[in-house]
Amino acid sequence: DAGVTQSPTHLIKTRGQQVTLRCSPKSGHDTVSWYQQALGQGPQFIFQYYEEEERQRGNFPDRFSGHQFPNYSSELNVNALLLGDSALYLCASSPLSERTYEQYFGPGTRLTVT
Amino acid sequence: AQTVTQSQPEMSVQEAETVTLSCTYDTSESNYYLFWYKQPPSRQMILVIRQEAYKQQNATENRFSVNFQKAAKSFSLKISDSQLGDTAMYFCAFCVQGAQKLVFGQGTRLTINP
Image 1: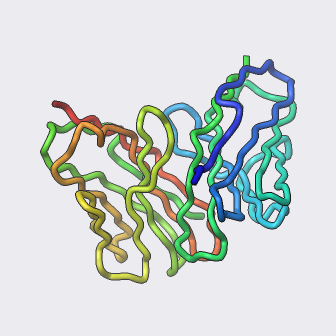
Image 2 (image 1 turned 90 degrees about the vertical axis):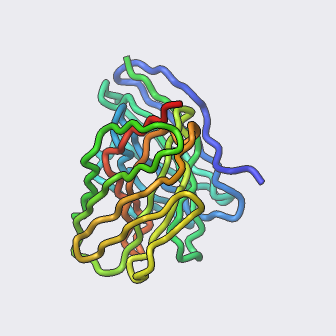
């Protein structure tokens, strides 16, 4: 049973560009959350998708947007990249129907903005 | 707003020793969940242990146990018989029931020395 997978592993972009990160949830999970982890910091919640809709959103600008597909996979898009967007982007999945509130994390995508 | 504070940026102990990591949180909610996650240098976040706020009994998972003090809003992690593989960043996280949004602390970098 594959866990949460993310692609690409690493990405280098230039300031002002746009980027798309991808996530496939753990089998049986229908909810996907995205987190941004700056170097040496704890992850910060960006948003969460369930049933192809954004269910919750953290304190991130509209430059950060997402999408969830019918197969529960998800994309995170960031427009007009800033140097401060350089971080590890983590995807986490969970089954909404369960009440354990455990989230399973992927290995992350390391984004570097130059 | 919920906040999580980890007051120990770094800790170091010898193999086989016992170590306790501290965590405090702030919330006005009464129903919530607390977690300790481990992030080894390979960076994939792994759940170590979970505690439901409505349970008075402290959670235990093999060598890992917690001391949950609800009134004090304290949630410490004890690692017994520490092993080299326990070397990692440890994050305390909080989730309000119904939200599935994790709020993380800043992390504690734990090093187990041979």
